[in-house]
Length: 427
Image (cartoon, rainbow, N blue to C red; front, side):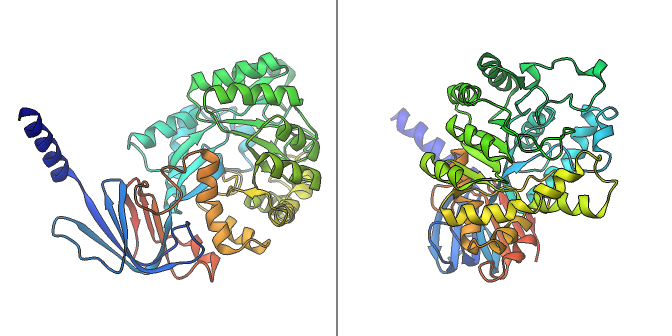
């Protein structure tokens, strides 16, 4: 009898404390099917979607109603490639010697909020100084507003490679950063670097499989890891349940990364048909980041002082190619997950990527699914996120109009709910 009474009191307390919200939605793109469902009600209890019903359900007196009858409602978007700590500027290459971690963190609070208000409730942060781990924790604890962050902490590269933090420094400052700073040159180093990322609080792993555009080094395409080194990284990452990502512009570096078991190729600029077929065979995702390509190309062409001289030719060569390669990869059947490389392109402009993807040949609903269903699958969180359905977490966004007819309207987000909490609701 006492046990029954205790159970009843617990359930009664839960029912009193539960916060129930009814969203009356003009249309719902739940990302399970291929069309919108008109006039739906999403019922949310605390941070869980309790039910989705047809019509505008009557709202109980103890529940909150939110009128989205003139809007299209979708799952919260996910960006699989951001650098949440910073934003590209001509001062980037000198500020590293001047600004502190506190400066980085305080500036980043703005970038975090911009990203969330743009409708991106989850992001994968692919490398920074380590402040990204603190940003993730501050958001999770409610100290600042921002998306749910899965961070790689610091990227992993090779000596002189795209993720070597001492590239371009005077010889006296260079030395050998080693695995602790993410610089590796062997399978043993590779395992140690992954374990260090785990120790430092990372959620995923990012490697730089080729040269890059923005590093102070001449080569932006050459392969920078052996297959064995990549495999050692992926094997160590698997021990911790980490998803892995490989920055890659050149085909040989991509090929080695895919053969080594990497889970996603970032950018994929000069991807060949051979690499596409290999990715299809292995189930490897492409995260295109067209936004970043367009941004660096525009800056390199129109402002000769924006980048150091060694970087401008790479930006001009690589920038325009990413969108075309994405179109070919999508048509070839390569799995696509949404990603922008925001931090290179401005934070808060993430939704421009939808337009670029559609412009390259991807249907609007498929582009939206790339930022929901595919992204949640890549992150291995599809049990909780990525669709609007009973039992999923209440990450929900809405825009006025029909994004299937005009994908650009996703750049003006009206409603943002993350984890059952409303962060934006503009009439």
